[in-house]
Length: 153
Image 1 (cartoon, helix red, strand yellow):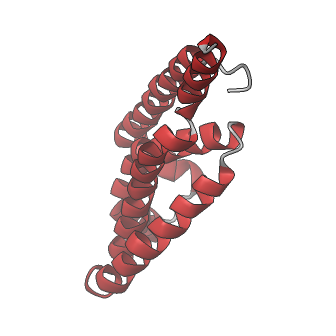
Image 2 (tube, helix red, strand yellow):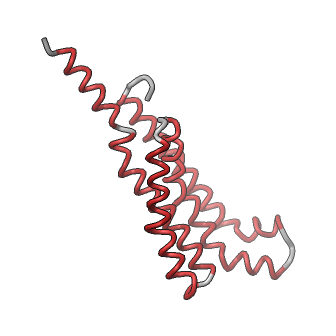
Image 3 (cartoon, rainbow, N blue to C red):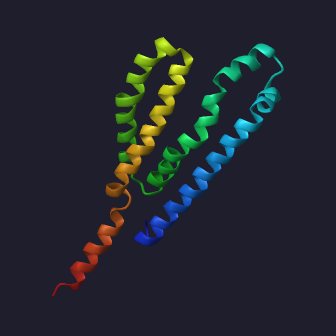
């Protein structure tokens, strides 16, 4: 971003997503395959193991879903576009997370809370993607404007 190199910026972001989402999928598969073993590393209490198993589906889903917004967080922080990151977080919290908690917690209990958090993280990833053109990829527009200004007599 500091080099004003739009092509390499897009390449870097694409590679960050390939690696980040790839690792998210790898961890999701590890949690699917070795979930019971992972839980047993932390405890031998059968009640705790059973309770963890009840909510393990959310642990399996989280690495993949969360990878999108976490990668964007790093890009936005690196681009010093934290105001946009903050604003999308606030919007997603009030438009997605809080309504979901209000309406899903009572009928679904802790699963409703996990679903609310998962939808919040997905909404953040979507919101940051939608804002990227203005706050991240606009570097290409800046470069084009500078080139057109220097070409004018």
